[in-house]
Image (tube, rainbow, N blue to C red; front, top):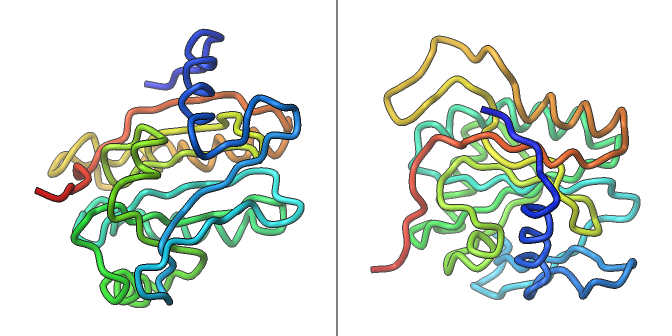
Length: 199
């Protein structure tokens, strides 16, 4: 089911975001996030949207989740399609068991590219309220919600899938945003694997 943000939910969401990763409520507030790049030895770095970015798509993924693996080609296609329109894609791996080598291998085998990093302590996942993979959170550079939820409607849960998706929710939300320029706050329910936390 698809929902749009009402004002109360929107204010609560912004309050969550402003606690640590979006600058305070000034009009020039800017999005930033911390991840461990796949090319460093557990050195977290702060990232910000690239110049002229209109939106950032945070893709919460896992190397061992079959649904996350299934949606990689669609995510890669959308990243390539929307790159020239100012949409930045960032793959986030929040399972504490993930390794840089394992993520690189997954992405190489799937033939996908683009920015990716580790979030082993679930800092970013917690800040965005993400608990499963795959789940998408799409934000403007000043922190407004464009979309959060599933990539498409193929899966209702693990082992509960259709032969092919009928709705491509992320693609539809991005197309609407690019056309209107307005962050609509659309939400769908993600289906996948719970993020693995350290015991």
